Image 1: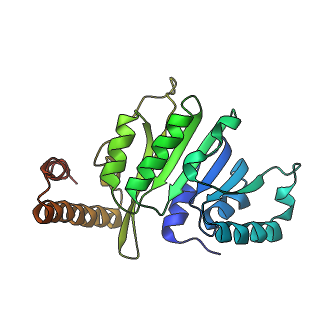
Image 2: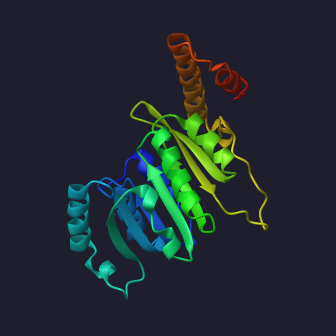
Length: 232
């Protein structure tokens, strides 16, 4: 099945050099299947907590990629019905990419923190695409001292998505790039279309926080000020 705009962008941000890729909250496994198709890592792991969904996905993968279930395959796949926070990364001394998309930023923040705290010595990249609460997620990533590799902003079906590729590793061969609480690269447009998306997203985000502050009597002025300081 053809990937939508969001999943296609996430897939394009998966580089080389990974031993294990974990497609978490994978739903029907479209993203992981695309990565399996191009042999993006030695092993592609599909992870979700819904038993029926994972049973159906396992049967589909066994039908379409039977050879990849064999130990001799260059790229193997495995299906895990489990809580994402319990990923068995400590079982593998390797380079991991953990992809989490399609859930809220609050839950994503909890999952990323739990994975990192259980595997502090493991080399992990996280490719994250929350559906909301991006500011909350970014703040936690900053607290964890993660390194920004890249980030991207897109619009699909009248919704905006931030995609962040971050790392737990401190690579001495490359400069450390801190994560900005309101984003940095997502506001730097190279095309007119991307410039329009950034402007519309900034307007919508500011309106959201101003409305939330007004309706819930919650002090969010520091967030409003941070977004107001952005120059396009």
